[in-house]
Amino acid sequence: MRLMLQNRTTFLQVLGASALILLSAAKSSAAELPNFADLVEQNAPTIVEISTIRSVEARSPVGDQELEDLLRRLNPGQEPDLDIEGLPEVRQRGAVGSGFIISEDGYVITNNHVIAGADEIKVHLNDRRVYDAEIIGLDEPSDLALLKVGAGDLPYVSFGDSDAIRVGEWVLAIGSPFGLEFSAAAGIVSAQGRSVPGRSSYNYMSFIQTDVAINQGNSGGPLFNLDGEVIGINSQILSSTGGSNGISFSIPSNVALNIVNQLRETGRVERGLLGVRMREVDYALAEIFGMERPRGAFVDEVQADSPAASSGILNEDIILRFNDHEIEHYTDLPFYVGQYRPGTVAEVEIFRNGEFLNRSVELASSPTNIVASVSQEPAPDRRNPLGFRVTELSEETQQVAGISGVRIAEIGDGPGREAGLAEGDVIVALNRREVTSAEEFAEIADQLPGSGYVPIRIIREGQGTTMALELNP
Image (cartoon, rainbow, N blue to C red):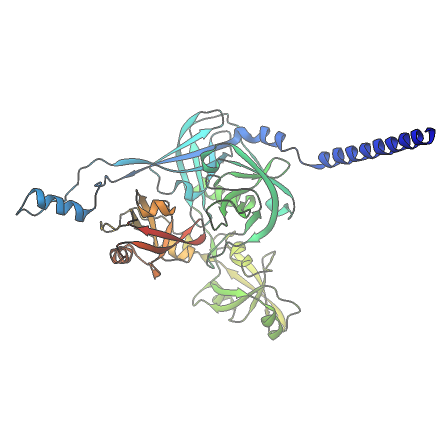
């Protein structure tokens, strides 16, 4: 009996010691986790919600053909008059996004796509004050916009060095996903130097990739490091559903500051142009041209009369360095070139026939320096059974984004809304037919079947997806 009591006492002592060890380990582990609560509390006053108002033409509740038939029945022998000019415009609430204050005198950063085409922009502060915003400048290639509100003595963010961020570091986003203002979400940096799929060689952006839960409405909000500094501006998600799949992209703060400073000074952004068409150096190319390993940007073609041609860069050269920047992947080159203004003289290191050569090149002006804007002129007023109207893409937008199509300008009740389409989506194909203009879209829409499902291919926030439209269910 005595031996049993001793064994029991020993067992309890061991059990208690184990519990203390586990508790101590748990406390130690918890102590290593970041204190997001303090970070949110300190920075929440600098976050804003952006809402927009758009004015659209009044529309007949029925289609032209139905209205013509009705008027003919009511007025036999008379041609129907469908002139609806003079009807008042209808004001619709547009996109809701996020932003943040960068100066005490009311400068605010958000995404260009949040406010593009808006007639009125409202900035909602954390303390529930609401201000009308003035647009200082827009930059479509970077998807950044600089606003100004008429208020002073405002709290504002501090910027960190986005080049110093490492994969695996904790980051925090604050914004208004789905209109749920001032929501926080944490995660880690999952990759750097990302070029969003589907972009062209004019893509002057190299994104920070994170697994933070970014959704519609987070666009334009800040990405903080653990020191409470902004190291990114949330811009896009990669998703097949329109919701967060754990892959989001943020504009690096160092890039954003360069763009914002230019917008603040002149209202526009100027980027340099090298003038080459390029691709990745893969293992085969590295072997063919005698490189130790694949790296750099392979020059497929030097554009005629370009700075590259004038400096002596040739087809099949491999660009390894631009000024002090190593070119590891071909997407690095336009990103770094875009950080310099036209007229800048840059040093370029190339690899040719087993030799490392240097060339000096004076950058020209990028086509993106033309202030890009989406045409707000409506397409020819031809009704379609899909329940929305489209506008043309500007030439600059097509060139910079590398796409052809039409943008949804106005959406009402109908198959489009039911399928999940939204204003701002770019339609690139309808019923498996490529769409290159508003007129072509209208022609394809007129030839759709009376019922059933048809596919529609769109690009939303840089990501392509195909949806099913149900006609006359």
